[in-house]
Image (cartoon, rainbow over all chains, first blue to last red; front, side, top):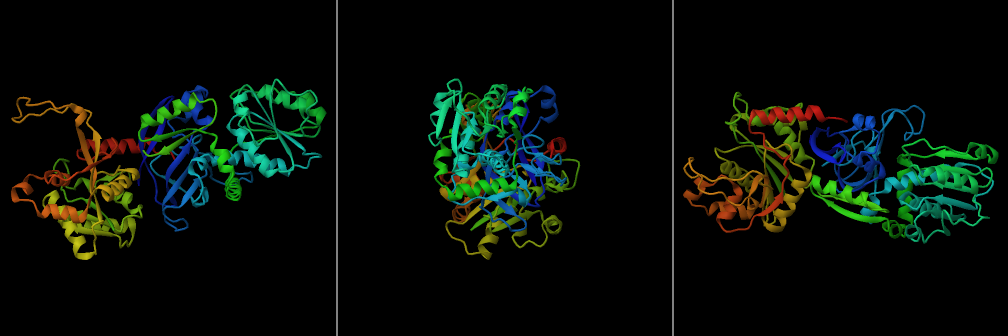
Length: 338
Length: 237
């Protein structure tokens, strides 16, 4: 079938293109999509030029929900609401599929979800209950990244988990702190950030601190770094200062630059650094289950939505990216009407 | 009920250099008409998809459909008429003879040579036809429209902002369309080249559905060559 796809041709320049897709598998119409920092870095051209040359033109966006149009195996019915999994394993090398070199990722290794229709294998879709808020569900993928990091943290045997620190007052920090409160209810969750207006939204957290105003005697058992970019360095430095021995540091923040780490103190305290990126089917199922069982989370998560843009043309798509870029906080949701 | 009518009645006199109607030429690795039908087959809202084919190509069309879709009771191949309106009338008559239709029954008519139609455009057509009774898919005119009655001198240059280029689908409530067609005089029938114009001529509203510039009609050899080139260049997955 002929399909229309909307690709970023070069920074700030989208184009329509046509592709041919097979009708095998499930055909999904995207309904709500969400812009991620990674999309924004392509759009702004802030990735290294050789990466841009290699990857563009490419359809962006890896956070999206949609509606099933057809399924040749009738596993899904037309009209079913689904969240689409952007990671696409092309083989099994024994590693978790979101870290495997045999996997491709939409909006990074191949085309993302900005298309008229998307053709996916059955295992790349997770059904959503009818009562889910689809604007919030659009960024379930981001929640799955936090979820899989927390799940990995929970697998570690550590002496104490009384106090958990989250560094970063952006979208991922918010989601990670919110999910920690849900998934580790016995622990105290403290959020460290730089923007007081953002931190004030973390009303569910046990404590919030500005990073330059932390009490001298404050200690944490484990940390979740959700800062990214060059600022990761100072965040990791502060974490290593405040963390108790044998703590784990879960790293989520993406940086274009190598980040120096005080390894002397990592050794001295016996710390574990755990990298987290992307997610797999079990993380999507886990998040959908948590949201289903805790519907109050939707009202917290909806606070993250700062822009909802109706996309009826390529110009609308460009405008939505520009709007997203000037927003300090929150998610830009695209209502896909193109 | 909702019907689709893929209008493939034409023999492609503008295509040139080939005896095969343009809807049967290959785009990518399939005939153009198959790509077009696929857009309707995947949409479960359609109860039946009628494919109107030139008489000498009816069997060929049936064979193609069997090859690409297997035995599919939802796709019905019919003979087209001499003109676009005759083809449309054939499909309406077939529907009336074979199905129980009500005032809400909708027909979405589409050119077989517009395989780039999007799911959104088809959905918008169904919704607009249900709500308003008739709709046409259009894009704003980008070129200045120049009118010349004698083909020599400009008689008018209308304001471009008020002009749109018509695409397809065009969608209607069948009973209303049928009633209006039957009320046409012979003179009116002769000048009608567009189903929406029947509504306009009879003072009925036709609502606009936003088309896409990509929803091109494969009319000339250049269109097909261009489409094939773009398709080859941009298949990334």
